[in-house]
Amino acid sequence: MNTIFLIALIIYIIVFLTIGILDIKKINSFADYAAAGKSQGRFAVIMTLLATVIGASTTIGITDTVYSIGFPGIWWLAFGGIGLILQAFIISKKVRSIDAITLPDMAGKIVGGGAEKLLAFIIVISWIGVIAGQLVAMNGIISFALGKNSKLIFALVSAIVIIYTLIGGQLSVIKTDRIQFVIIVLGILICCIYLYFVKGGNTSDIADGIELLNDNYKPVNLFTQFFVIGGVYFLGPDIMSRNFISKDEKTAKSSALIAGISLFVFAFIITLIGMWVRYNISAEELNGSKALMYVIGIVPKFVGILLVFGLLSAILSSTDTCIINASSIFVKDILGKDSVALVRITVGVIGVLATVFAISGNSDIISLLTNAYSIYTPGVIFPLLIAILTYGKRSISKGVWFAAVILGGLFGLLGAFLPDKLLSLGVPAKLLSYFTLIGMGVSLVISLLSIKSKQDDGSN
Image (cartoon, rainbow, N blue to C red; front, side, top):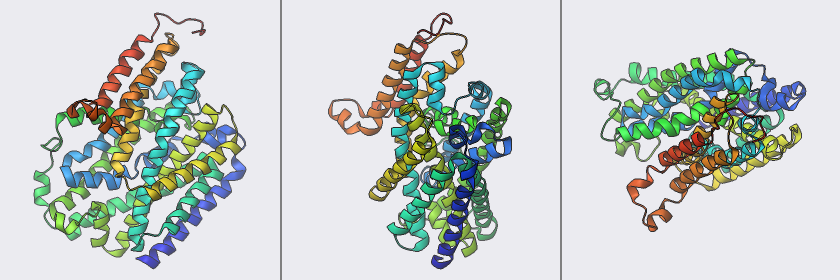
């Protein structure tokens, strides 16, 4: 696979780099660069939305989870689909009507300037971890395809991703997302069909193993992931960036709805692959390998190569979106500048930081992403949702609202990154697993208290 993979990889990155170069002349404003001119139609938005949400956690991570706990591993993506559908019916049209470019920009418009900077800091810091998590997965795929760990090739691929994102902005990201999404779907679908209808094996027990809850995944896990994972799909910065690029409110709503329904289909297919490995490959045979990576080695070479590029596309389509969004947020909402040049510089800086972190780190993908979400979700989801729903009807007390964000985020931060310290201070271990939910509850209660009795003149 080595030679064929390298040739295909060179063609792959040349195509994307060319797209970035061709889009340079189309960028005439900050909105063009950061939000693709806010003029994208339904098809483009659906494709880029799905390509964005299907990444390392929803391919490699999901199959590993399914192998470990069984069919309930589907819930990660299922809650993603639920989050998108709820977004479509509850907030999509209203968010698009606010006419923001970034999520913190929207917070600034509906709560105030301080809210913009507060959310921007939380998002930028958290999303560097998300980007690094995707790059860790990309490094694993490249190493697998090459048969060795090549930091040079990994760094070169990372550099190309950074460069085409840097020069073409959201316009390039949206176009590359279309190509990447097609490759993702083809790779995963053909792999699933081959395993079940050509490779065969023990498939009868798989049907008996289809269950939504089991001893490995209990109602408390269901409840926790609904808020922690579903919350990010409902009101996450990358997801909402696809709302901001939509040409109008109707497009934003229908795109989120269709993407949410489509995500259920993808969730079922990727879960079936994990289930096949669970019922046909022993732990000894797997020998510590990632479930989906093991599959690449047992399917025909052309299917394996397609699957490799499907996984690579899944990761890169999420990575470039994260980089451009985090960079746009840093420049617009923290620095207060509408400068394309500054965003390009920031793309380079964030991309390099995440690459260095990925090369030096060895964290589990799901854990890394969940930890990042565990800060964002309790600190931002409910306060921002309350502000959106009350916008134009009631005023928000900024001081109380800020307290909701800070205290909620603090619970997530402590639970995700300082559990050992909390244990040493006497906090029960069982309570630690609920810190994110506690943070969400705290932020919800306080953000509700921030609602004033009536709309005032905006001087609050």
